[in-house]
Length: 162
Image (cartoon, rainbow, N blue to C red; front, side, top):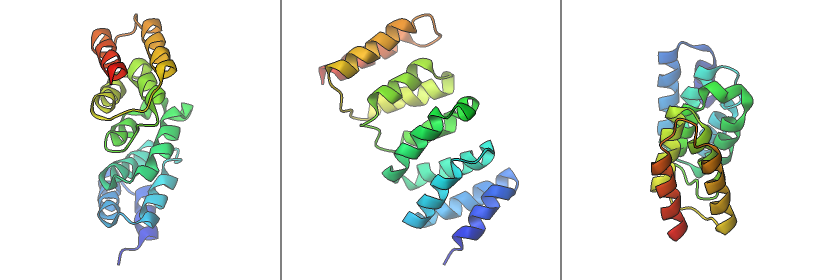
C-alpha cells in the first residue's frame, strides 16, 4: 500500500527528480484519492509542483481532472507555465470545452498552441453554430499573431462540417 500523503509531501518539497518519481508512483496507483490529491497540487505556487502533479494526472487519464486543469490554465499566475497543463488535457475528454481549447490554440504561446491544436484535431467536440462563429471570430481577430492561421482555420471549418 502506498502512502499518498508521504508522496504528496515529496512532490511539495523535494528536488525535481524526486518530485517526478513520487508523481509516477502516484500515477501507477491512480485511485480517486490520488487524483484528488494531485488536483489539489494544481493550486501550488511552485510551477514544478504543478508540473509533476499535472504529468501524473495526464498518465492517470481520469476526466475528473479536466475542469481543474482548465481552471489552472486560465489562472493568471500560470500564464508562463501553461504548456504542461494543456499537454495533460490531450489525454482527457475536452469535448465540452471547445471555446476554451480554441482560445488556447489562438492566444497561447507556441507550445500551448501545439497541444491545443492536437486536442482540436483528435477529440470530438460538442459545438453549435454560435460556438463555431465565436471561434472563427477569435481567429480573425488574432490573424496578426504568430499562429498557423491556415491550419487552424481549416481545422475549425472541418469541425464545423461534422
